[in-house]
Amino acid sequence: MRTRTILHTLLLLAVTGGVPTARALTQDELITRIQAAGYSQVGEIKSTAEGTTAKAMKNGKEVRLVIDSSGQIKERN
Image (cartoon, rainbow, N blue to C red; front, side, top):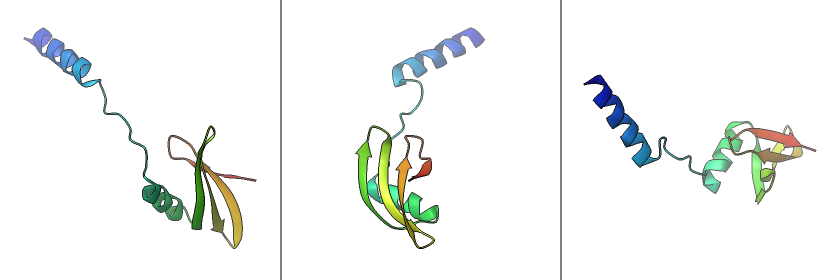
């Protein structure tokens, strides 16, 4: 019985692709995430080989951001 349950589980995973696929953030979701990290005036959002880039303000200074595929936000000079 246990072997049958395991085989059914494996078959279900194979048919469904295993794990749900990640979906890309919409532009509004991306802006919300950047603002939640303490940035304001988010704009000039572009998709690049490095990830998604954007310009924003933080502590009165303009910064360039790179958001990688896992959603990590990093400042670039």
